[in-house]
Length: 263
Ligand SMILES: O=C[C@H](O)[C@H](O)[C@H](O)COP(=O)(O)O
Image (tube, rainbow, N blue to C red; front, side, top):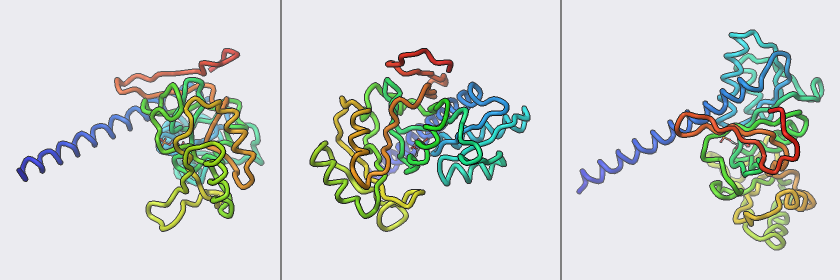
């Protein structure tokens, strides 16, 4: 009996490790192809945050070394800034280079119109500023982020960055008027709430209506005093690259796109 349990436990461990390795490979496929397709000489590049963005930086570093590309990078978080510095890529900022050619960033979920939920790593405020000032936002992710509707696969909610003094009033307002539950994000290796790069708290809004008009929801949320930004990226991404489990990369543009994009 005990031997059987130990065997099952080990098997479970092996299965989990192979799924994680598969996801990592899928992220890498998407990141590498997006960098190869969109990063060229003399561009200002927005560098996203999260585990998939790390792989994009890895590829940029390879290409800068091998092809002597001349690019300048704008970070979307403290993590991205560290990555750029450690990879010895040229670092710039929005004062020196307010117009970004392309930003390559991860996402937690992407729907059929390329509306994204971002902020699983709490970096979405700077990510949205950089994306807004970019000519092109390119999303990179593994196949588990590829959805028709938001909330289909990502169950951790839509992140909302809030002023610490207003977290309770914002939470109550959302729950009363829009439904669902807005939970204060608590640190894993820290007692108390997660603090963002901007010194704020995060609410994760769960059990939202998946049929929502996300543009309207985003505007409604931003009217609440103390709510600084949402992790909803509506009409921002022009193309998404998903690494698939069979080793291919699926490239998607928004289903509702009015114009064809040169992506
Ligand atoms: O706050 C974090 C960012 O929005 C990330 O880009 C997003 O959470 C995706 O991260 P990952 O590539 O690790 O799945």
